[in-house]
Image 1: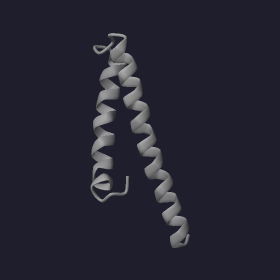
Image 2: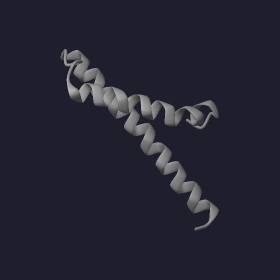
Image 3: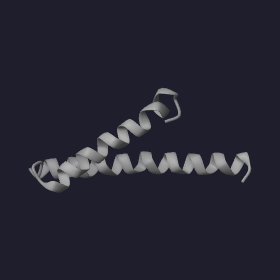
Length: 65
């Protein structure tokens, strides 16, 4: 694998994480709108949001997102 392929794979993985974060946020907003903030699904998604936020923070600080 050359550098160009590695970069393409990295960018795809980073984009997938960012996309997942947006999906989680949208789902949380929907659950919140329906008053389902005390469900297990909501709690799991809230935890996943924090994990994704922590994973993406260094890339946002570097201006890559």
